[in-house]
Image (cartoon, rainbow, N blue to C red; front, side):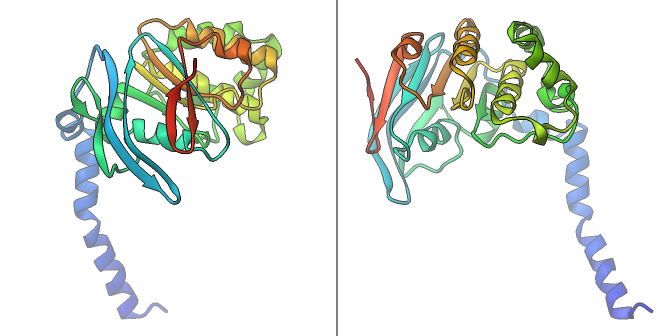
Amino acid sequence: MLKISSILLDVNYIHSTKETVANLEGYLAGQVLSEQVPSYPNVTALEVRDVAYHVGELAVADFSYRFDKEKKYAIIGPSASGKSTFLRVLAGELALDKGSVSYLENDVLHEMEATTAFYLSQFEHLYHTDFENNVSVFGTYEKGRDVMLGLLRSLPASLQDTLMTASNPSLLSGGEKNVLCLLRAWMSGKEILLLDEPTAHLDPALTKQVLTNLLQLEDKLIITILHESDPAILDMFDVVLEMRDGKLREKI
């Protein structure tokens, strides 16, 4: 038999969720989301100004750089040199000690990142569902469908079949998961793509094929962290930056 005290506690929990439920319903109805998330079309550059930040023992101080739209950037460097951390800074996921990261003179916020840029981490979540729901995130992404389908059709037939028939992505190989995540990035149709080692676990031939398709995308700003430094691959990019000891420099 339930105690009265337990029932009263449950009632209090139910009452405490009313405001949260009301807020959620507002978001779902578009009443709040449309007001809080602005649109930032025609981004011309992503600009880093006098940025300083630290994460553990890694520190970056007084760094400035301008990433121009329609250019494709590769970031290379040793493991634990801060490449992934820097990409998180560009995505607005880490607090800065000083300075700013901006699109169109607007400081990067989570809302702007969500509407303007697609950040693909090394730990992108894949859902226990079919191909369509994974690449579109249950219909959230549709704008880049034609581009996504173009990339999909360029892949080996066996890989296409594996991805399109998979209902449990946890059973895919590391490389197959990365390709599925990249297809999601294409599907998003975002103007800025921030990609953390998107070709990890791919063989050299597939790496080159995927990057060729990626770098042919027009009207995009693409910043890609690579785990390799093959000159033939790096030559595909407009600019190569090297991260070493928390410092990012153009590699000549």
